[in-house]
Length: 261
Image 1 (cartoon, one colour):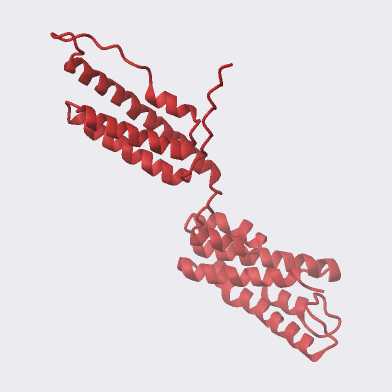
Image 2 (cartoon, rainbow, N blue to C red):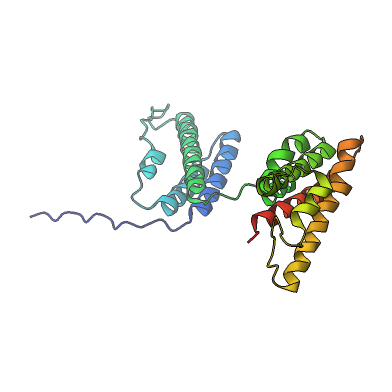
């Protein structure tokens, strides 16, 4: 009984995909150089083909179907004047085979590039400094100021943020007292540490809490007098950087309102 020839043991890929991609790219470029410098010597063709074949095997494994595709079909040679294969025909065959194998390498390189991209975790999208700034600001500041800021109207953006702050505090005071105030008088009424305090920001039973309440009352009132009012009543021009500073102050005050006990 005839013994079956054992199937060759599979050899797994030994090159990482990126290293394999680079190796196949080098072989592709070398093949293009050989093709450009025709005629193609048999020894040069054989050496290049064997090297490229070996790199495909190292990249995809010994049983990869890419190896058969790379080799292609055998050729039938025509006889020359003395009965043997014509060297001219053989050289043309080598050139045709080389073109085919270069094309295979190009396809394999594309495949590897796709697989590498799919295997690589998405890199974080670069964030511009201005985009990062908006992610740090209170949402009410972003809604009120960003469209104006993006249009280059920096003073208007600041004014809009502090007007929104004024409206939020005004609603709180109206709800508790029925009084309708505005600007610095509104802030002094809302945050005064004297009892009864309308908008409590800290523990007023402690000296530290009362100091914090007094300090923020002054900041809220000062922001209305020194920042909002000049922007509303005069044609004020400010730089982008100064506008950002003011917007962070408005954001801080909104955050303080959110944190009240």
